Length: 189
Length: 122
Image (cartoon, rainbow over all chains, first blue to last red):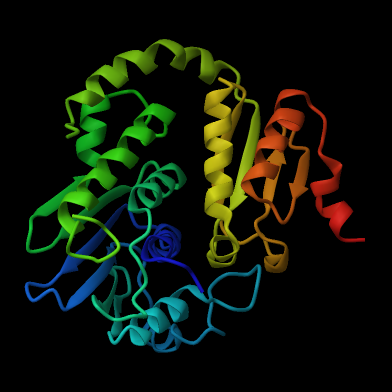
């Protein structure tokens, strides 16, 4: 099992990178009643056939060749269902894939958010040419992070420079605090 | 409160030592970061490598992540690949071991034999 939601994002978004996506949208939203926390990861990668899609939550399905099991999606599905939520995955070949999982905010088994800034930094350093968009939303506010906006600012300096990544990590986490502080019980508001 | 404008200052600061860094593309440190690696604690290991390399101002090594290397029970796995393509595989890593690999292997060129796959699996 993975210990927090940020680790699930780190894991699942790599599937999108492998699928050849050049834009990956990650959204974490708390609904108005503050009942469900919903994670969605949407990409414009190669997508999956209906047949593969039907079997993708089975741990013995994987597209990789180094081992015979694929635990990423089954783990996340389990994490959602254990916390009173639901999981679904939609995919169209050559269009992309969207994965949506919800967790009850107050459920004792809901995973904590984890370090989202670090997750973004690792994803960006693994796929610097991919556009990552992250949206955080709660009753308090909406925050959107877009690597294209960063790249516009830094020009010819690679986004993988340590100082830039460090800045991104702090920027994201500062906004996690603003959006989810007091909304999720592990983040003091 | 951070703003995008701060990036301008970082840009100017990093542009100076950028050319130097690109000139000597040397050692690659690759951390396995698939489901198995993440579950075993690969993230703090990767962080330790990034921080230590920055702290010591090492310009001849880069840190990257990769998928599953195929030996999930030995995760976190780290591969150190020199400029000629020679590869050393470290297994069951943690942040403290990562720091030792940087000081002994990356800086001084001595492989930390006791952490390698050969020492663990015989």
